[in-house]
Image 1 (tube, rainbow, N blue to C red):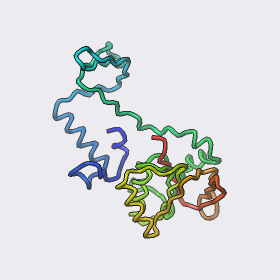
Image 2 (cartoon, rainbow, N blue to C red):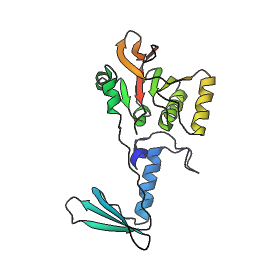
Image 3 (tube, rainbow, N blue to C red):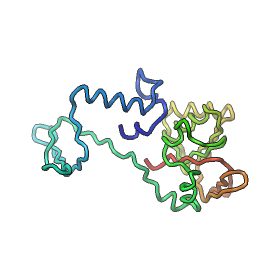
Image 4 (spheres, rainbow, N blue to C red):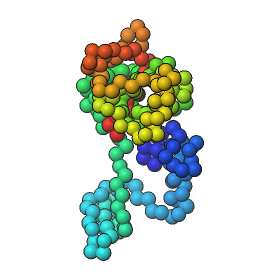
Length: 212
């Protein structure tokens, strides 16, 4: 399931399942794998991958409590990397970690999509990729105003970018590209966000969608 298990949003990339969430798709995928009797090896650590003379692959793995083993396959797919990898952002932005502890900064796209998420009316989404745009469109649909802040040009896939352009045209979203968050602090109007270009913004919550 990986990132899908953390996603309460509809996954528009899957044909025929446009109204199901990532979490529902992950569960359906698990059931499909089990029904096909496909082996799942949990707790495995890859040690070495080799290309065999016949073009197939051999993958040596170590499994806790078991003897080392080798898996042979026609193809080898690497599908990892669902952990938050931008802890440096929290260290670089003044007061960020304190606001994470207070529940004012949410880490990861899944946190913003839960039905009981307390986000307020104004949300800042930090990031410029698919996750940031997907979360923004979802939150706009719940009646919130969302601002995307990206330190570089945004790079979401076209279908996601088109949805956000429509949200912006209706005054429900905004994009600030080429800026980085410099500091955050609790203020009388919510979270006071200061950017590196000297501009500022007041929001109720911040959602980090970067570094995955």
